[in-house]
Image (cartoon, rainbow, N blue to C red):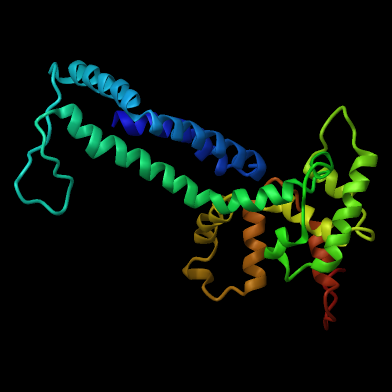
Length: 267
């Protein structure tokens, strides 16, 4: 419990940030990299790290039950479904059975879940004017989006984009992603404009779409089981975006003008 508390205290702010609506993928990946470096440092010094965790565990046990010593679980001669380390020392047992596997699995999970994000985001980040001048970007770095890009034209665009970044680079501040996208001329740099749009809209998680599930439960009930797709989408948008004010008069006028009617809808 003490080990999990130590690790999850690092990732809890990240977990909350990843579920927020305005989460920035660049910022999230950078923070994940910082957490990984710290976890790897703790893992490399696992003996010292575990000593501190074990001391905290002993103090916690003493404050709860009044016991001074931590006891190891029952060990049997033949066991296949759990860790069965032959030792009489509680510190050695929990060091091998709990601390090392927990740290290793935690680091592995973070790498597996976010390594692909890191590779994509770093390639896209180098398109920003303050970073592209010193980078060695190539069209092959964006093969993931080859279906939507002209890679041959992108090679020349990257060369011109770097020159453009040198000319327009401001030493005072770094441009934001949306600002870089709005300043990118789509006629001169169509492929780079597309990549900047991807960078600005690339989500970190599916937390925001998953929030719509509860909305759909309220809307598509057994009374509305035959609701069409267009109407269901409209009702869901109305329910999710409650802050947008809808003018009833405008809705009536638009509805009345959609098709010819035998009787005038508006008198």
